[in-house]
Length: 248
Image (cartoon, rainbow, N blue to C red):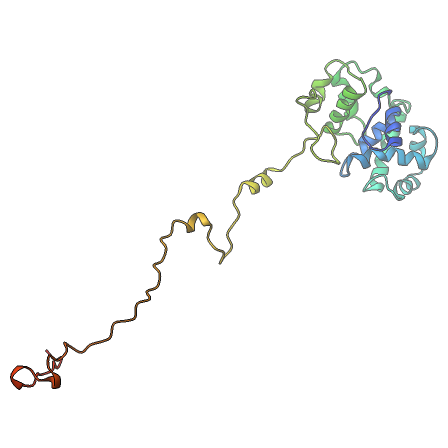
């Protein structure tokens, strides 16, 4: 593994990943429910506590489970759930010890095809199909492990750079799809609700007919009838004008 990897964003941790196949496998195993940088820094954190120049599958497989869980739980922990992941790391190393004599490179060294290599990766403890496809894409794209049909076996993660799923947010694997959920997209398209008592939008107000301005003219005085034509209320010839009684 001469190719330099840049997964942990830490010089020493990335150097270990680049030279140690077991460290890369353990980092891929830890890459769940935590940021990618934390997961791939785990093997280097583990090496600092175990000592030595490289991780040893025989040593980890023979380690006391409780002591190994306590080792993984020291601050900074190798994972958000150090106890559970310590058990998985030991299961992986036991499997490598029994089937590949503790040599992680043997998992892919003599694989004759992409589907065969995928089956070997899926058979590792803690590796489902998706995780196996992601690691297969890592082997093919960055480490030069390219058996026949490896791109097709890696599924969407084996596509070329122009069409491969891109990394859109920090803390995610570069071959993991990411984006807003369908529910969030619907909420983004939905117009905001107007609370009770809030003013109507200007687009609706502008179509209203404006109210007429209040009148400033003084009110007309009330009158009981036509004014008397002569002083004293008498008509022509001196007769008195009868006022309307309003009963007619």
